[in-house]
Amino acid sequence: MAHILIIDDDQDILRLLEFSFKRSGHSVSISSNGEQGLAQAEIENPDLIICDVMMPKMTGYDFCRQARTKPDLKDTPIVIFSARFQPIDRQTALDAGATDYLAKTVAPDELVGRIEELLPTATPPTLGGTVGLFSMKGGTGVTSLAVNLAIALTLAHKAGAVLADLALVGGHSALMLGVRPTSSLPKLLSTGEPQFTTEMVQPYLVKHSSGVQLLASLPAFSEAVAPPDRLESLVQCLKSSFDFTVLDLSHLLEPQFSALLPLLDKIVLVLSPDMPSVQSTVIALQGLAQLGADDQKISLV
Image (tube, rainbow, N blue to C red):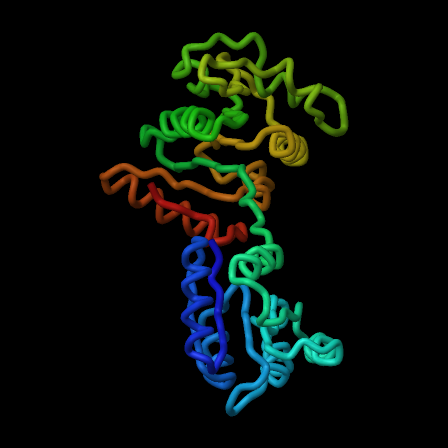
């Protein structure tokens, strides 16, 4: 459904066009002169404008010229709809900035069809994103939320989702999913390849029955530390390989963490209803601000 603005001083034409476009499922607003129509167009930002030529106060040609000087209207399709149908009239309209010129001899149903061909095609929203869940205090449910979020995204959107347990050691994502991974994140990070690829990462993932792919933490103690550039490269690979990437982040604002901030579409700070958690959240917000995190990306849960 599109929003169409119709400008014509003939009330019969206005009513006929309004009825025709509403019957086709579009929303319609009307104006009886060019000056008022231009003001409406700036406020309403319609998907398309239909405009007569001979009107009081402002002609359709002048309307086009002025509309094209407005930032919000410079690309809006404008169709001149006139009783005048000589070639010179059409050329004058196009020179003034009109998108098309149609004669009023066109039947209403044909007019609707022609107009719908000119309507801008809506760009479908991009499906996907990278979410990092974090808390400086343990026991707030970060891993539980990360696991359930990954499953929900997979099932609701019928899309590929990967859950990466970035605790490196002692993460619980595999336990909560009830899977037994044969490899782990630290092993993947220890490979000598300069850049990660989908083919390289795939053997380190374990698939849950929901469809979620898990990159698990190491269940045993290890002193291995992931260089920030390696972790950053890995997350970039996951982003390009899956529709959704859910990161169960560690509890510390480490160098590895700050390197990931530009890659996150959303940062979820998880807290529980107690004073230690609130205090930790305040500290986390201060730390994220110092690391340059975009506060528009941060949500408290």
